[in-house]
Length: 165
Image (tube, rainbow, N blue to C red):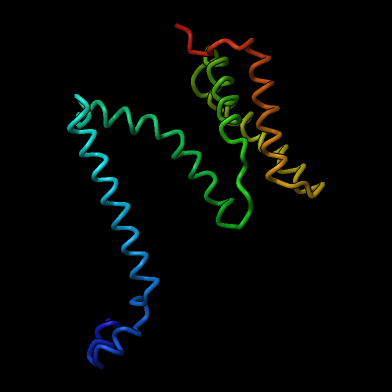
């Protein structure tokens, strides 16, 4: 509605209206460019890859992206308050998945609770070290990622962990 009021005053006033500046137009152009490139990539894969635009492939893509999406939702709060996100998220997720698969024999709910508890504990330890000792979060979480990865490799002997049955 405000833009219409500026438009009634003439083209010069419309150019100075909030949300119609160069930065806003550049942002819109950038978003359109990203959307166009994304559409072009989908079209190229649809033409060159057999079965790309099938329901089974769409489900597989959503299934693979779901873990990253869930972790991104969890990290949104950290990012919103201005803190640095953990750079050991992938390794923490791997350890939590190993705990989940290792305790799946206890039942779905206990395995899920244990996996979430291990993931929260690993991340909480990093948070306490950063908060209590004023450690650099980037360096600490990179180091924690290597430590967690090494621990996971040591526990399972480098083997692939998968559900039994």
